[in-house]
Length: 39
Length: 268
Image 1: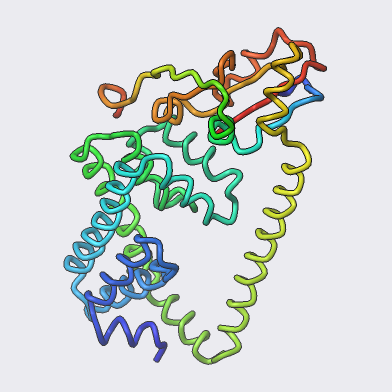
Image 2: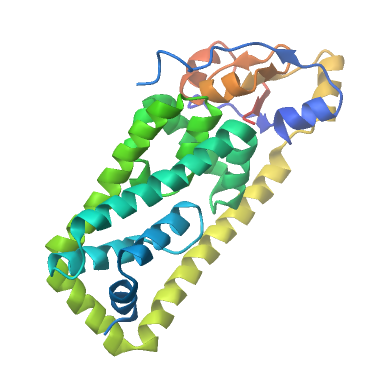
């Protein structure tokens, strides 16, 4: 964000607040680092 | 004789074990001064060094394993709770997850030397579903480095430690007041920084209902999910249409946007 964006706001309460308000949520399965990637 | 030295001499290895176990479980009873004193006493032949090191290792690994299992059971919740108790909660989650994302389980080797990361690393490993046997291997390595360093410093500088303790004893209550005052001042400064940070956040944040309204009106800002890769793996939820970008790759992901474009971020 070094370019100097002038209108950046964090979402109050994050995902929990968004879901608690009853709005749509996508659930995308990201790869867990269960195997292989732990050194 | 200094009270700490007296306690270590009186109760021996058991006292050191209990001190380390409680500290590693999160109770604020600093163990490093005890380890330094124990190392100094071991160098004088008043405590068995081998038993001392073994006791500290067992205490550290046992406490870390408790945190690991809590992390495995409660996942992200335990991390959030620990960071809420931190004096710098704003940076706690990001820093700890950043270290873990970068170094994985190997970060446990140096976790004890990084303030704040020490307590959070084991539950983070549990939440990331690291295999128990590999966790034990790395956490034991880290415990050996940490306790070995503290005890070795005690052995190397036993003369200086005795002198420092004698000076503290001769200062009597004054030294305790001075140390306590410095600690209270540090906590007060961190607390004020935390309050100021929260005040700024309260002013700048957008509520979920306002974001939804903007989306419904067709004025949706660009939404960016800036959680770490591991955090997204543990919690795959996402606001529809959000750009997924780790904080380190954020510049690349938003490079095509105009600087007056409204952006909404979420990191939890």
